[in-house]
Image 1: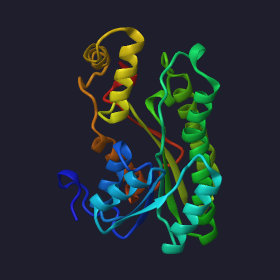
Image 2 (image 1 turned 30 degrees about the vertical axis):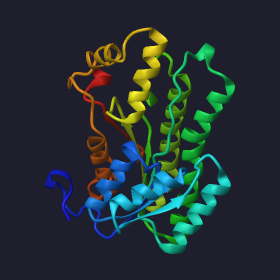
Image 3 (image 1 turned 180 degrees about the vertical axis):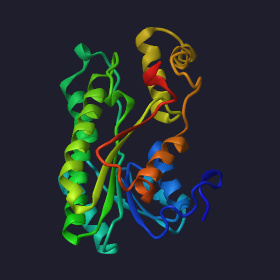
Image 4 (image 1 turned 30 degrees about the horizontal axis):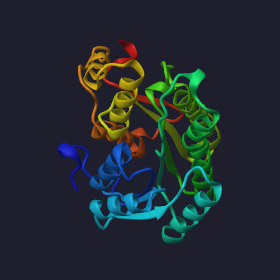
Amino acid sequence: MTGRSGRGAGLLEGRVAVVTGAGRGIGYSIAHRFVAEGATVVIAEADEETGRRAADELGPSTSFVPMDVSQEASVESGTEQIFASFPTVDCFVANAGILALSPALETPLATWQRVIDVNLTGAFLTCKAFAARMVKTGHPGRIIVTSSLFGLRGGAENSAYSASKFGVIGLVQCLAAELAPHRITVNAVCPGQIETEMIRSLFRERSALLGISESEVRDRLLAKVPAGRLGTADEVADAFVFLASELSSYVTGESLVVDGGFRVS
């Protein structure tokens, strides 16, 4: 099989991968690229309609399992279902996440808690569940967690999301140290400004907060990106393919930034 633009064909041939939050956006692109590289992919998604539709679109190498990453019972149930179908999982991607944009002093505790529950606790619960089974079976593997550029630097109106994504990087580093003896690598990918529904939602919310047009919000952002454009979900997914493949066999505990140079601007 060939990957996007014909690059790296078959890098994941014969592997089983699970991707949470793969019904849309970056998660969908990760699942799509994994399938293109030869993997069998399970989409673990809280929204059943979205998850089933994505699995149908991606073809016979893809299946769907319901999973709300913020709920331990749902994580355990979904993980058991997956391992009942596949004796081993080669790659687990903790991608499910949400964004809430508001100044810290105006952020309700319920909003803060929901972002932490999904983005950070969800990563902990799912990584714990899949890592435990990888260790038990003695099967080497890859765990990749979606963090963010805002897991490396803060930003206005971004306290809950940024705190959750900083936490993800700490979790990744701890898991990498603990799981290395079991031949399991653990890494994070930190996307910058990527053309997805999440960033379009951010433009709408920031437009309302600042009282300027969405196009002006976009233009202000692009002025800070050396590449001069937003990234694509496929470009982010390529980083996941690298970390899921043998090309990264000696890489663990790292945070791979995909941001068009935003961090160094």
